[in-house]
Amino acid sequence: MENKNLHIIQQIVANACRFLLAVAFTFSGFVKSVDPLGFQYKIQDYLAAFGLSSWIPSFFPLLGGIILSGIEFSVGIFLLFGVRRSLASALALMLMVVMTPLTLYLALFNPVSDCGCFGEAWVLTNWETFAKNIVLLIASIVVFIKRRLLIRFISRKMEWLVSLYTLFFVFVLSFYCLDHLPVLDFRPYKIGNNISEGMLIPEDAKRDVYEYTYVLEKNGEKKEFTLDNYPDSTWTFVESHAILKEKGYTPPIQDFSITDIHTGEDITEVILADSSYTFLLIAHRIEEADDSNIDLINEVYDYSVENNYKFYCLTSSSEDQIELWKDMTGAEYPFCQMDDITLKTIIRSNPGLMLIKSGTILNKWSDEEIPDEYELTDRLENLPLGKQKQVSDTRTIGYVCLWFILPLLLILGIDVFIVRRLERKQARKKQLQQEE
Image (cartoon, rainbow, N blue to C red):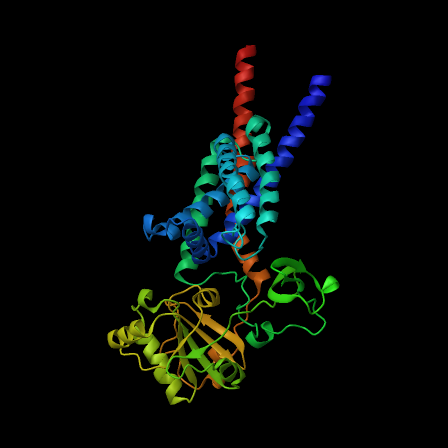
């Protein structure tokens, strides 16, 4: 009786850990799969922080990111359904064994601001990430040791179909979002957001709290003081230090600053305050931008000139690279410079196109989706393109889940009502034959 109770307790603990891992890996893999370029940038940050950028092929961050996010998602789904239990539990443990020491290093030395384990959907501090990984490491050890106690929801005969469809789904999703734009946008530059409002700090917002220390000297002796024990005028000031004690409110948008490349003038406010339409061509590194659809970009520029709309190309590249781009593409639109990280955050395409009005983002297009002459048939005021694109994260998540869950439910139905029923019939038939 005691052994049976112990077995039940072990099974409950193992399956609780299994579901915890399943949720964490599925969520982590999914949010990175819908933003493959964002994960690529994070891997590049890691390589730069560890001095490995020059040692790694340029294609690796993107390809490696897609594969890793696909593995994470698949491991989560395998654990959720109880398929490929040995493989899934082993991969989960391997990932946590690698990631836990890495996140401890990040927490101690802070070479990158956050690990990017949940993409832009949920940003954790490095210490929060390490604490999370400790919990998941313990859970993965339990699941690996007790993997035979994990309850199956799909029979062995059908688990190959679940495995193949999971891999097919996650990689198709990644390449779709790579070719177009992320189906879910977790960044502050999502459609419908106002850039000016995103830079504001509310009057009642909590401010950063600093502690100031002052180094002063007297008779060759240097000492540190605070405002509370600041000495008399016989001491000579040497230097001061400010230490952040409490972090205050940080606006979602902090580094949106546009500089005219010719005059050096900051024209951010002019562009954001314009009540008419403004096209912003985003090319964070113009020397790396795809020029296969340059004719469409030039058509959009010509259209903007004809209809008296503003058009700017924002890039972080040097003037020499800009001139080379002009010579190569025949670009006549004005160029402005902006921070590289900000540009990569605004749109996951190089180049990409954004339409704003009075600082509000109305629409965004990847290089493959730039509107053509058949769409730009009238002024924007009279076209659907001139209206804010209606985006619903809830609806998008619903559609994505529908495409993934419905086939799995179909597989589950076949498994329960056909495969397992046949197995039971065969088992009864075999039992009757043995009794005879």
